[in-house]
Every structure is written in structure tokens, then in C-alpha cells.
Image (cartoon, rainbow, N blue to C red; front, side, top):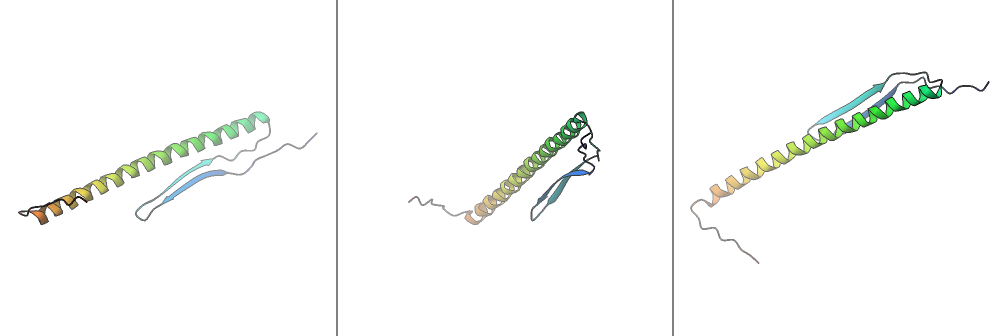
Length: 99
């Protein structure tokens, strides 16, 4: 009889996002499994694939929210810049110089 393949380690899917102002870790643990049969291998790999997809969705949602936050900050900074420019130009004739 041929020896059976086995997987007896814990698999962790881990994604780390690091930026100057924020960091976030996404992690999912696939339970340890002793895989003996083809059916068990299929179930293990299916669970692994499911966690990869779930992690990808979480990362995408996080990055989308982060992009929206960054856009809001830039927009707010732009509005403040426009206010400051308006205050500086108050009472003065502003001439746009087109080349």
C-alpha cells in the first residue's frame, strides 16, 4: 500500500497594509487538518480558497474606504486653500494670466 499524503500544519492567510498614518493586518487561520483522502484534500483546498477570496474582499473594502478618506482630506485641504486664497485676494483685482 502506498503512503498517504498528509497536511498537518496550520495555514494562516496574512496580509499587512502599512502606510505612514495607518496600518492594518488581515489574518485568517485555516484549521489544522490531517488530509488523508482525496475528498478531504478537496475540502481543505476549498476552505483555503474561500479564505483567500474573503481576505481579498476585506482588503479591497479597506482600500476603497481608505481612498475615499484620502479624497475627503484632499478635498477639504483644497477647500481650505481656496478660502485662504480668497482671503488674501479680498478687495484686490485678480487677473488670470493666460499664456
